[in-house]
Image (cartoon, rainbow, N blue to C red; front, side, top):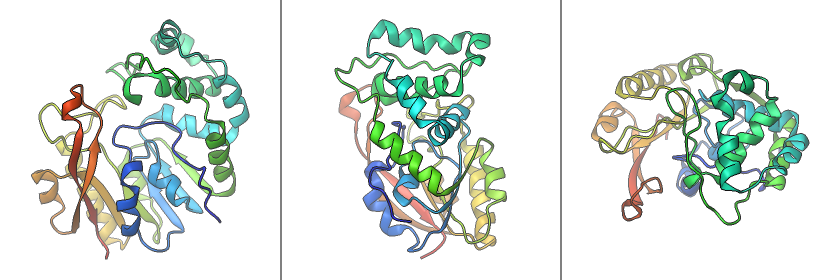
Amino acid sequence: MRKNRLVLPVVKWVGGKRQLLDDLTPLFPKRITSYCEPFLGGGAVFFKLQPKTAYVNDINDELIHMYEVIRDDVEQLIFTLENHRNEEEYFYSIRDWDRDKEKYKKLTKVQKAARIIYLNKTCYNGLFRVNNAGEFNVPFGHYKNPNIINASTLRAVNNYFQKAKVQFSCMDYAKVLASVPKGTFVYLDPPYDPVSDTASFTGYAKGGFDREDQIRLRECCDELNKRGIKFLLSNSSTEFIRKQYAAYDIITVKAKRAINSNALKRGQIDEVVVRNYE
């Protein structure tokens, strides 16, 4: 299956890998037919590789529902997006839809998917963040001309989903990894271990991802390794992470940090890429 250059991430995502694709691509296995990504997010690596068979998962159910709508009803999604406006008062009215739980349940999957894309493109810094109640809580971004309706990308992603065998799921990543078929390449891009006490950002879903979760993930990687399944993992270059994966091949790459309230503190930061293969 030929790769389509128009197949690109549909939403912006904290820690997204678009900027690191040139560094990561040479590190992937040369031949990938079956692929698994249990922390999908914006899917930059997934859309770059465009595997024929894929098992993709995210704990954020709204994100997975959005991808399913792109697969099943892309034209209605584009039509619905065309009705959204880049206006502050309107933005907050749409953002507040999930404050009324009963009303929100009655929305169609297309309406919910369009809302997520719209909010992502017009909110501050393109964040996807929810509070402890699971409500989207990022403020208006004040952008002059955001690309709310990227119809060519939406249609290209839909076309890829139609041609490939892509299995979507929304569950704990450990369950996904436990059922990965042999011969599948696994890419792991979990919430990162914070490099400081104020650097943590895990607000894309209720709950969080602490060091106990990081240890549990490393144990899952150990199981993948025992089963002979190739994996590549991205994380922050902290002493804790380096110790966790000391048994594996570790490469340091430079990533641009874009999420900081102080613009002077945005810049390059070390990340690690961990592999269990050469």
